[in-house]
Image (cartoon, rainbow, N blue to C red; front, side, top):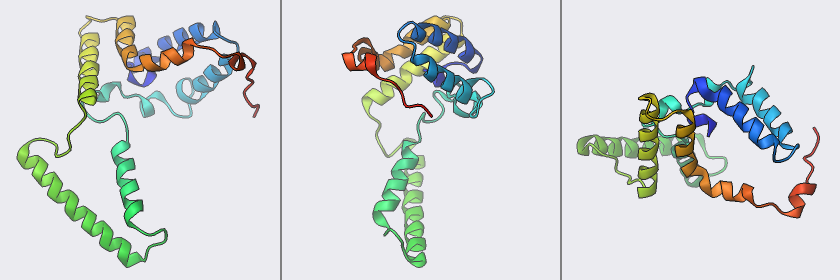
Length: 172
């Protein structure tokens, strides 16, 4: 949820997460320390690198489209292609992409339909962001709205197996 929060609220929200998660099990503190060092305070990857709040409603939240293109490229090219065969494939790919872009621009819509659930989720995010910016939702209300996307994972954390209590993470 941190990537979808306003950048100025990340520290506050993460402190709340640490407080909540440390009550569940002591081993979570190692995880929260790692996240803090890597992504939040004096971070290896600063929040400006991974935070998506300003991009909600503007561009995709994932790079799946890039991964899809990469998969397509790998499936059409040999493992070690001849340089000229690879250049020919890239040229053909560029041509078909340009045709699709021109069609999308002429029709004023994407040629690829998005799933209804993806569109609905994006609209919920856009509305929640706007309500937060307008002061209708405070940070807690905004977070509750976002949790609807992650609810299916919360059920996993609510159940514990006896093995979960015995697990020790590997030491580096």
